[in-house]
Image (cartoon, rainbow, N blue to C red; front, side, top):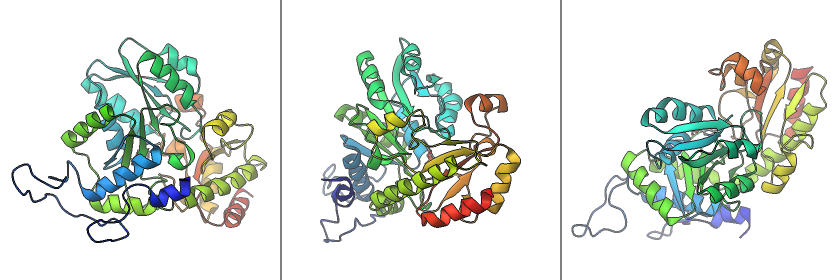
Length: 377
Ligand SMILES: *Cc1c(COP(=O)(O)O)cnc(C)c1O
């Protein structure tokens, strides 16, 4: 089955009981038992709900794993994965990982004795050198935000396997449509489904896929114990969005290619970060491990005031956090998503005051290009 067909036919399609073509919203907390312990697969909706289950099977099939899990947010998903570990365990994490992931690991999980080292995972020797006796996993994000650094998933997974570590990949930016971490050797894939999977800026959700029955059992135990599950309405809405993931990702990708090339040739733009550009340091690796470059672009206009001027003039790019939706969004990492990082550290990382990040939407690219042309003039 090819990728776009899979998006329509994978998972549990429709409803066996009624023939409904779309999965119904099972708005229910508990289920009648015929006798004690005799039930039809569901006993309580924290443990399992048919609408959530349909979504979980859907993402499992899209990522090609052993089991899927739906959580109340991307952070609930990542936190639940981290609860597979115990006091005294250590994990290695991509240094410019999503800010919320950095926060939960350094401000919450550290209090429970889970230790972490943040390294530039685009350089495998940095990862290798960070492995300690108590290391249990390598957590990657690729591409990263906002500088779109690329990590070689296959090479890291190979290293991890040789050392008996789990490889976890945050696949939010690429989605299974463009990048399949499990096929590249990863053990766990996590998503903020709030972004491209949902795709319409209308639902907050997290998804996880694991590659073994043991991990499935362990993560279901955490999910049911901690209880950060996705409700049936949101599970349904997410599936509705995911059906068009292929069409949307193709459009995000095509529009972003045009816009990145335009920005790259514009005199008012100092630097463009987009892995689809041939001079991007991760370009060759992206060609090998993904089937598209995605819709995220960062570029430097030189100063805070120039960034503000741009924001004021743009008509079709909405100033907002988040990404991956049908509408084009723009943000200034230094004053928004990465404001908590001290300025010196930010500059070291390349997150300058004039850096802006766009999530290219699926509007007509000619309108987006005209808008940028006018705003940059
Ligand atoms: C948004 C995001 C998250 C967190 O997801 P929420 O759904 O907001 O909790 C995690 N990773 C990446 C890469 C993200 O962009």
